[in-house]
Length: 229
Image 1: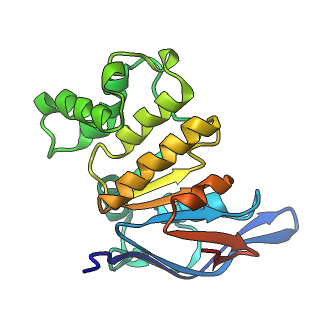
Image 2 (image 1 turned 90 degrees about the vertical axis):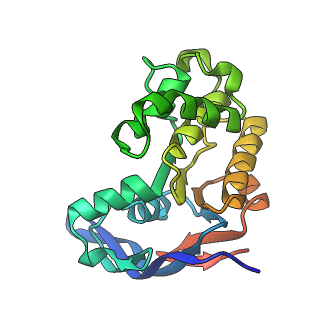
């Protein structure tokens, strides 16, 4: 029985930027849907619109035309407060540069999203952070600062932070861009395991390695999303 369900749907999304006297189309008639429990890879050349698409999916960029349905609700019908709640409750972000707080230990970095999550009591935050570190294979490094961690270890902490509030969606923008081949494979394997647990994982990457893990590989070409796997 297939338990996957459609949770995100973009219909005829158009996004452009103005540069001096010309308009540059980034996304044009972009239509795509995403399901829970699947790993998606988004590829394309630099400047093709990959990060723009991630920002739209992540409810960071709302300046576009077309329709975005987020768990069945039209984003165009939602106010900023509702959109912020969606972003907080439903989405976890992973970035190329890790974006860890250098002054906080590994487990403390993971606790940051929990600080405004009323469902996690203050007394439970550290225990949950340690459980997440164990899940990403970093249990023995919980007390280390980012400067004491390798690139791969930092990204594992960043992934643990992204899933701290148990979001339905993980958006990863070039999560292995600063990693060597071995660590790249480990991060993709980790993200694959997260998708296998029922989450929707969407990864932007230049690396062909991601194709081995993705259930669906998409390429942005001339502003449109095309399947290549």
